[in-house]
Image (cartoon, rainbow, N blue to C red; front, side):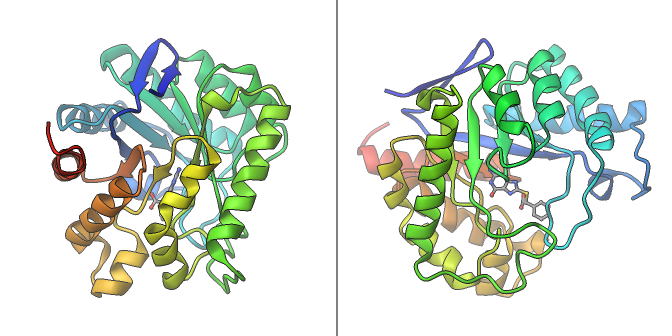
Length: 283
Ligand code: 7PM
């Protein structure tokens, strides 16, 4: 039975856990200004959103301060810290939940750990300068995600000979690199990175064969919520992709994913519970 130790809180991965997405990028809930400053109001709004997701059954809240949208500009490390850290502090003080920090920045990894973050979620798999060392110095679980290329260019022309084995090989190498740096394998989680340098067919194949990733010997996280792959199949805009997203959740759970990263927590928690009941033939 796998348990993740997340800074004093425990995640029981014998059951699927739902991670709620909390964006603190300006395009997500501010005026889109350049030098982002939180107002007391924007922190309150983030806190309320986190509380709602926890009430709906999320056991992890993932705070992201850098837009990794395809083609997005990079934000400065300081700006990302200014967006994320005040929200982390408030949530940790007021809500009993594991706070995950979606970052690739060594500085933010270290500062978040000091302020009580419970998990580090890095779409660059600790590939940035000093991120590996910073993560190793914390005792937090780390999610390593696969991406081909960088957010600015990744959707230009994704190519693989065999997407499943290439994603597997990459994640396996990153696991070894982390273990060599002193991060216990029991702290590591992997994620195929749906939509990060992948065509629709790559994404569908990765989901259908997600169970292959279990061979890596660590828990698998799946993030398909409202993504383009759902939009492409159903011809729906981002705000109309819930039902399609839920289908991907049922399949990810059936294939053995243990953490599901989503925007729509309430609907997803029902979907996960029902899927698990069928798989276990009981409740
Ligand atoms: C705009 C486009 C904003 C895309 C945000 C996104 C994942 C992640 C993201 C994922 C893990 C989104 C993405 N996706 N972290 N961060 N796995 N571990 O759709 O799939 O949320 S950002």
